[in-house]
Amino acid sequence: MKINARLKKIGDLVEANSFCLDVGCDHALLDIYLVRQNKNIRAVASDVKEGPVLQAKKNIRQEKLEDVIEVRLGDGLSTYTKDIDTIIISGMGGRNIISICKNDMKNFKMVSTYIVSPNNYQEDVKRFFVKNGYYIANEEFVKDKRFIYQIIILKKGKKKYTKKEFFFGPVFLLKKGPLFREYYEREMKAREILLDLLPKNFKYKRYKTNKEINLIKQEIKD
Image 1 (cartoon, rainbow, N blue to C red):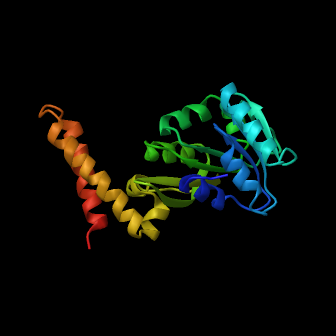
Image 2: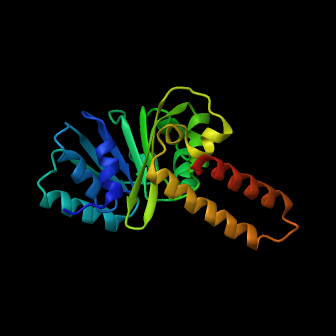
Image 3: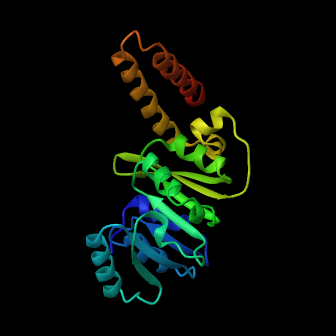
């Protein structure tokens, strides 16, 4: 089955011998890819909607993987069980990811590893996890067609980060590279457009946007 670049990158970042819960699995393409990597990975594909769950079951049956992928119908972390060590949440807004976790804090804090790929509000997601006892173990960019996505791996533990590290990502700041530059050039242009559109009386928003533009300029300059 064909899998897009974003899901493939997420799958490649999952550690061997993991038992994963894929929240919002859609058609279970990631889960099928995961267990085919010969890394002794098991998976639970879960979704809140019956349509994707039925399609996931069909795809898994077609691939003859029923013994290593279980499908569960449920909302957010409600499908979590104690044998799961890794939760994957991708392809949705950052605030939605935070909401899913906040709605079930008991289960949320039981998990040793999260792999998240929010479409936006990445800084908010990082701050939420760090505040609740996780540290940023790894960060990767992946380009899928014309879009560039962040993938963030969070593990149980405590670390302190500066405002700059939260804004860019502490691991991204160490790695940098071409996708870092391209991603933040786009972010800078988006803020420059916003600054032109913001009314003059939006003083704090203009100040904050200007500050972020200058911060990005400093990091991506040659």
